[in-house]
Amino acid sequence: MDILVTGTVLGGTYALIALGLTLQYGVARIMNLANGENLVLACFCAFWLYTATSINPIFGIALIAPVAFVLNWAIYAYAMKPLVDRARDPGQLEIDSILATFGLMFIMQGIMLLVFGGEYFSYNFLSEPVRIFGENYGLNRIVALCAAGAIAVALYLFLYRTRQGTAVRAVSVNPSSASLVAIDVPRISAFAFALGGALTAAGGALLSTFYTFNASMGVIFTMKALIIVIMGGVGDVRGAVLAALLLGLAETAVATLIDPGLTMAATYTLFLLVLLFRPQGIFGRQTS
Image 1 (spheres, rainbow, N blue to C red):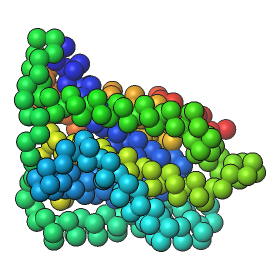
Image 2 (cartoon, helix red, strand yellow):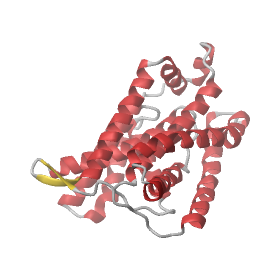
Image 3 (cartoon, rainbow, N blue to C red):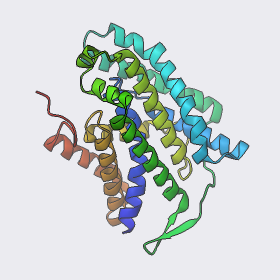
């Protein structure tokens, strides 16, 4: 039971982080390698809001996510859109966006190192035990999981119950066909990139409530998010959530039953199995 609860909490956090990259890569076709830096920046914002102004980090998401939305929209408009316009095919856009966001990753990381230094940061928020099925768990982790679940449900309802969400999914499936039914593909791509950044920032704010972080650890979360996106099926929200939960449970089981040092091995073994037996991802579509 301990593995199930702890793994679900870990997977829920991974899910929110990966949902942002799912939208950015699956809809806007931008493989954003600076996704992890966006998350770490949100961790620092939540830290500052809580320690300097006593704003609850859960409520702080209402401030952090809109700022991240605007920041990511600006990044797309001024740094990514020129790459989209000049790309002759999706392959060239993918390579150009990887190179561009690779540089953006170092720029953001350098600025955060300059401002915050290389020290580790954390703060006490709801750091008290709560008893579930006879075991004690951190209340901050449980609250973060509930908040992540609420955000994921809201995103699902938006994508599957609104016209704007339907347009986002249409662009994800086929941008060329979407434009034939009067969908403004460039605007939807910019919106999806910005929304993905806001989701990642929300994940960062939640993660900061129970995780120790520093300015240079964004790449770890980028790699985790990338693995989850590919495992779940590019652009599919349900797949990203399921893959994140599977990854969280697998890592927790290996850390508890075998050795904590083998969690990365468990991650890449699971990733390799999905690539071998279902390369399109859990909910991905087979290309014809």
